[in-house]
Image (cartoon, rainbow, N blue to C red; front, top):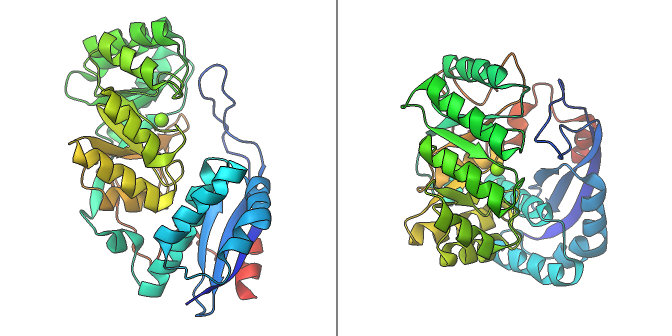
Length: 361
Ligand SMILES: [Mg+2]
């Protein structure tokens, strides 16, 4: 089997409804935007697809670099193609999501060729996993407590906060939530890189006292040294290396520095399934957990294939709280069932119009 075409099908992504906000300083949910499907075709008639939120960026990279390098190669040679992307990255310095989109499309293609869901190709470990409720940013402590009650009522067994990015106000929120839900509900906090070392230390001390399960990305992930110093200052476990570039290679530096209580992995930010599994196995070698960042069907495959992971991240984006359809009433997410990645599971009425037209060609 050889690759005969690599195409980018641009699609309009509707605005998030209702819109939501992240911490102070960060843009919130996206307005109507320009996304894209990557389509990889073969001479065997098997086609792999993957979605990207940044259509123009993906189109640029594919048109200038990827198509010319990939056409004529074996699509099942994923290790070779992953290495090719890093070689091309040396010249282009791709946006971090690009490796992931290409690799996910190759795994989708491989799964369809094998007539198996990707998690089975990876080597399945489980068929379901608990989801935690990962909040967007709400307006007040009272609203967060109300949202937390709704999440627990809907079946979630653990809650992670994204909050305002004010160390003292966020510390009061975290303490109030612990007081409200009692000692037995696992709680986590995600700083979205909002703090410097001083504020990260203050908030981390509060999280330690309130028995939080993990403290995620409190600072920008450019300085491994700053994370090492933070780890010396706080007792709460640090969950690190979500967005740091370089996939498993940069994660290795966080682990070697001794600051990682657990690491992040994902298809989107670690170079697809190939980089995400490298990251998980790297962590496993040190008896560390590799927790999967972000929702979505691709990450559900990771949750089923990574032995050293404990939760699926389910975004709680509104009040009243809506439980997404990929989490059941007991708070669990389940293994995807379609061959490949199974993006098709979300399409009640068939593929999006632009993609359907391209797939018919
Ligand atoms: Mg995060």
